[in-house]
Image 1: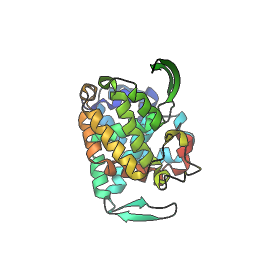
Image 2: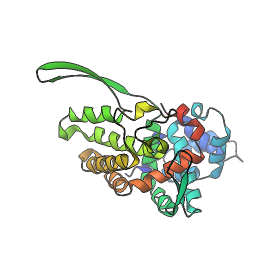
Image 3: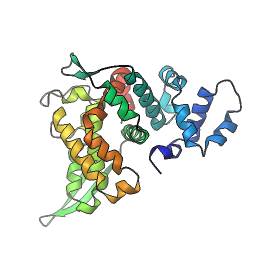
Image 4: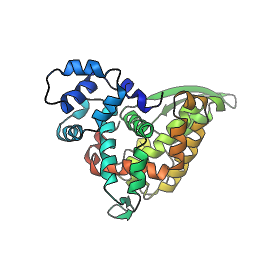
Length: 273
């Protein structure tokens, strides 16, 4: 089963009711319709594309109290796909105040037509709305060390991966690629000058090393490529998604740039952990 075909596993009962009550607004038997949809992911996918959902999530305050992050980002990515289809270019950030047109909007919208990619991007964005960290005790050169690691810190995850044997690095490689895509997609201004951090950017995402946009793109391609080689990726139906994201990393960040610039700019530091 592909990633998109398992959409329903990520939607809560509240999510499904939100979708039905918003889209099927001429009927009152919403609970009955929700029951009918529980084994019909294709119909849910069609309903997610209804623009009434986008209007509602833009208008309602505290939307995270009503629906899951996965549903919110699924709705926003579908809207970005439709808007990019009507455009010829995206705006590439080159300085804090300057954008230049790049004629790649069609490529970005075509990538979002892939349901598996779109579902993965929604899950990836949702994963950055919560914080997980761990404390690891390990030995090196005869000494015992205790180290706190955050999964939102690129250098932390990279260091933790180095402590794990190669066959068990899948989750770390996946996360390193995701961090690279998240930063270049949602916080692209941070990468403009690796020596001058933006005060409004959540530095804890970014690690101790300063990286440019090019650095993160190279890291993202590398780690999605590596993640795609693991059995876990094939078992989860993600190997083709990772390979595509590795091949089209720059294209993949453009819908996220569009989403950040047009839909969520003022909410970024509130929504993401």
